[in-house]
Image (tube, rainbow, N blue to C red; front, side):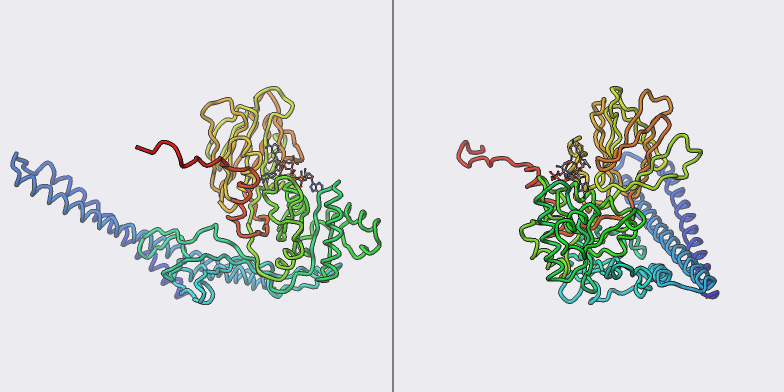
Length: 522
Ligand SMILES: NC(=O)c1ccc[n+]([C@@H]2O[C@H](COP(=O)([O-])OP(=O)(O)OC[C@H]3O[C@@H](n4cnc5c(N)ncnc54)[C@H](O)[C@@H]3O)[C@@H](O)[C@H]2O)c1
Ligand SMILES: Nc1ncnc2c1ncn2[C@@H]1O[C@H](COP(=O)(O)OP(=O)(O)OP(=O)(O)O)[C@@H](O)[C@H]1O
């Protein structure tokens, strides 16, 4: 290991030295070229002009070649440095694990992940694991649990949930070449062969055992459908069922048959739900999907959303076909949309520093900061990482996920964005300015919305339309993308489902076609 480190050090030094050398010679050449300019005797003679332009062309070509060489050397140096640092991290991790004398499988996974990054560039693509004999690229991205973890620790009421694998696939990689790197360092060419919005497939590693039902309250049709589905899942698939405490009471009061149903008694038990539940079934509209997501402050099991509302942007499944649909989802791989959420922290001015005192609030649609009952304009200062973005003077601001782009943000003039697009929408509500257009920011940023200390009024934050919190002068709201997305099952695939929902839900760009008869174009 020591020798390898020396070799790495030498390679880094060598690359940096080469890069320095090329830089010096490039500068010398540049100086020569500029010195050449005033010395050249330019006469009003074509031959001289041709000679002069040829000479300048040769100098420019040499300069370009030197600059290209310099860029390649710098990229190589950066790559060696990255590899060296990764190797150092792997070593440090190994050392740490040995000290702790109990290297868990999760640690091993982290190590393997780091190690795989070391070999990423040169690793040859295994045709069966990546592009496959069928020509469909399928690349594993996430595994639900650490393989081989001690399952017994969580086994109390029901067994621990079953593991699954996620993979992304793409058709039509015709030349058989599939690049896994975002940037190729070897030639200094930048390529974006990997796409973040490929269809993701979920494949169970063993049959799912536990389903959680989340249902819209105060609806007789939802209640009777829930009872029917619970029976069917128990009798035909021997599935363990969880429901919310309210629904458990209703079902058990109705028929003692439902005594097998499980629920939770307190927040602490609710927090462990994600370790027991394989699949969530929602019966209601989009609001029920938002509600189901809000029950999970960390990882969320896959959601199969049946439409029993009026719009249903996130509820593609028809309740009449629940048997076919659930049979497919329980037995076969299915497409999912990974819907990112925003984690929001309210930082009170009274707090001494920015240590968060409260748990973050996770939203699937958006966080809205508005003027509430106040008749004053909201006055908000917005920052993106450490850069000032703008001051909002108007009714408020919506910070939305791409899933939420078709909800309140759309009503306030924001764009509709496919849910797999990695971004955060920044949409003003009735801004008192003609030029305040909505923005879409990359998902890597952290946004800070501050009520200035000298603000005339208060502002109110609400989270997926719920849980309003007052923001006084000096208070701030901090938002970034959460590491815990909501995986929703697709009826067809992410894109077909998205387009169907904007066509059917919003009648997007519906217009009678022009008739063909009439004046011909001249
Ligand atoms: N002016 C508006 O359009 C407006 C105002 C307030 C809240 N809302 C939205 O309502 C959401 C809360 O929904 P709810 O069902 O609990 O309240 P709700 O019952 O008041 O329903 C609001 C409507 O928004 C729709 N909706 C929710 N999420 C959506 C999404 N991602 N894409 C398209 N439509 C969506 C619902 O289907 C419903 O028709 C908030 O997150 C907010 O986005 C919209
Ligand atoms: N399990 C639940 N517990 C408490 N409240 C819920 C639950 N499910 C949904 N809600 C709330 O009920 C309201 C209505 O739900 P939902 O949007 O699903 O139905 P809908 O209004 O009939 O459908 P649509 O929005 O498509 O018209 C929402 O505000 C939602 O937050």
